[in-house]
Amino acid sequence: MLKVEHIGIAVKNLTASNQLFEKLFGQSAYKQEGVESEGVTTSFFKVGETKIELLEATREDSPIAKFIDKRGEGIHHIAYEVADIGAEMERLKNEGFILLNETPKKGADNKFVCFLHPKTTNGVLIELCQEIKA
Ligand code: ZN
Image (cartoon, rainbow, N blue to C red; front, side):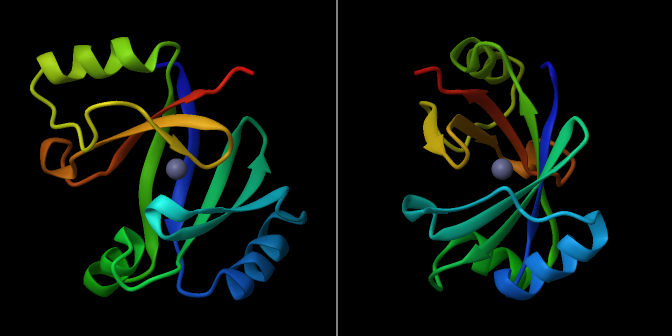
C-alpha cells in the first residue's frame, strides 16, 4: 500500500457537514459526487497529502444509513492507495482477509475500489483504491 488516500466520514446531512468542514479546513469541498450503486452522495476536501470524504446516504438500505443507525456519525473507513488493486486484492485474500467485492468496482473520485470486511481488520473498514487512468 502506498499511502492513506482519504478518510471516509459518515454524516447525516451533507449540506450541514460541508459547511462544518469548510469552517474546520478554511476551504471548500473540491467536488461533490453521487455513487448510485452505493446509495451515497459524497463530497471531498483536500488537506495536504490526504483527502476527507464525507458520505451521506441517499436511501435507507445504503451501507451508510445502516452504519449511522448502528454506530452514529463518525469515521466510516480508511482508504489506502495501491499501485495494482487486482494484485493487492489477491495478496490480501491469500493472507486471510475477507474482501467485500471479488472484483474492483468503480467508486467515487475516479477510482477503482475494494473494501475489506471489518471483521478481519479489528473493526476498521478498509478501502483499497487505485486511480482510473484514462
Ligand atoms: Zn472512500
